[in-house]
Length: 595
Image (cartoon, rainbow, N blue to C red; front, side):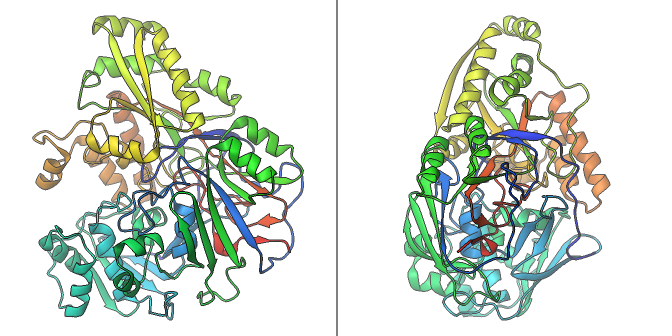
């Protein structure tokens, strides 16, 4: 099978609006307005000129989402890998990147530090070849053995950024150098399951200095599509880890990306310097790159206007986006949405173990009104986990329950009343949406309290299972990637509230026993084929199953705005790239500033 197939995103319509996203899968709210996919500012000035080397850039990030890295920057242990895409791209570079034309169309996965990839005919073996001669910034080689060390460690150290892979565990572990094994085990948690590590070393192999193979028990058509969002894409220096130790390495990981860590104040500011030994001649363009964590949209925009920042990633306030669009000092770029809102309902505990309670939420929810009232009617409405900027988009689902407050009231009466806690991430737009939902639900006779928490606390609450409903997003450029459908609706996902398989009392039981629900099987089948038509049909089937069982109503899909001062240019900032989850990825090696 071909090695970098060009995969087109479906036609994109007029979008804008609101964002709510996640790390691996949690949540952020945002919005944007206007035509998607233009590299012309809303003031009519095109981005022109040849890239120039030199200069520095300060990027402003929302402290509630991408501006938080409390669990560090080590991909093996970070719980914000997805939210910290830009930081990771700048430090690690990545084996693969998601690229697009200058208008945001024809998005495709492109080998970056990898040279190529190829699936076997049965889809059970992925072969990845690395570019020869790449070194980490400490001078050690980024070869297949280093990638193998990272892949095993990244899968085995507890990061929420690790993908769930169905590996072929029946393959024997090949003979490996004892020093490699000693170094690997020294970098793993003390309580790691050695048998599991040996199984993973049987399924994931370094064939030669530049070639690796991943052997799967079931095919995974989205394995490479998902890489830019998960921690398998991020390769660090094993030697640096051994020399620095876990704590120091988590603060300043050493990798082969375009920039190196100069200073790190956790979840406040990250300062990076140009990697003078970067493997791409002439790149990066910038001499210095900094990421500044800022408390919300208003402060981010004020900071940009005051000249204390150069770019905003993920501006979500519609009012501020409109101001930016009319501001001649900045360029505003909007992308294609890939992640619709969803109200996740935890079916594993009261009250939403009762289908009638879940149906009442569907009938009590009017996302159309929220779209009109909060976002000027510019939202991209969806009844499933797909959106217009991603693959396999289908906006409507047959039999989907739409707003009907009278039906909601009757259901609430039938079940003797309904009291609900609605959680979300503590971000302005998310709070606005949850407040609107609270009003709608109360009008239907539902008692509602809102629980807004920082991203890390939301992750923790999901992990406990002690939640009732959560305003989140579900979806990604590829539904099997990022915070896609399996994360939100797979029975064994930490971030799902769908029923466990019959015979399982916990997700761990289900995994240990190989148990699945019917929905799990359809989602797995959709990810487990490289036939795009078959994948599309299966995702439509999954959307219908979610709707029929009332596992969670969907709403507005969105893409936040990227806002930069005049003179800043680069892919993902001034030319759109579809978001792997919500915020578009920025390719910072090619970002430049006019001198």
